[in-house]
Length: 199
Image (cartoon, rainbow, N blue to C red):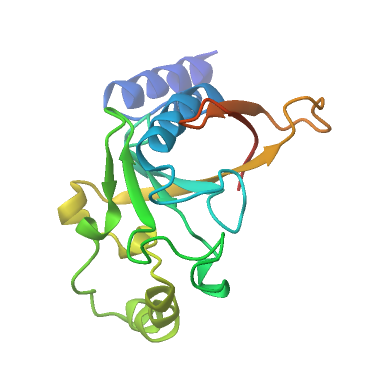
């Protein structure tokens, strides 16, 4: 009984010192849907054309800060495979420099993530490997990942990320698996039903 009491008291003390309970770390479809809707309202036809298609726009990286129960931002990558497509084609680049977006979860505001990109990188074996092996290919494709974001510019150090993939599915067909769904409307009013997966 005494050991159980000590354990309970320890958990209470940790919680009062700012530790985040595991149950508070959830970010589900109900939280994603209005944020994604706002992003679509702002950027459809400018940053992407095909919602829920991996060739264009089908995922976002939810960025967590240490000690925060809610995500701070979502890093979206649009025009994901446009580098493989012919210029001017339906899946080719819109502005090739505008394919990385930050959406702040508290306000829903959307910004070009390039404003938060690192101008320099730390010097260490792991960073040197990243700069030599990963960075050239990412830069060539115009991709900005979470580690390429400058914590000083962001105002926080991304402590973890989870990728949410949203794949377009027929709204009339019943779900074939246990993946949750959301619906987002394009500016013309057309609904797009999206099957969600967390990676």
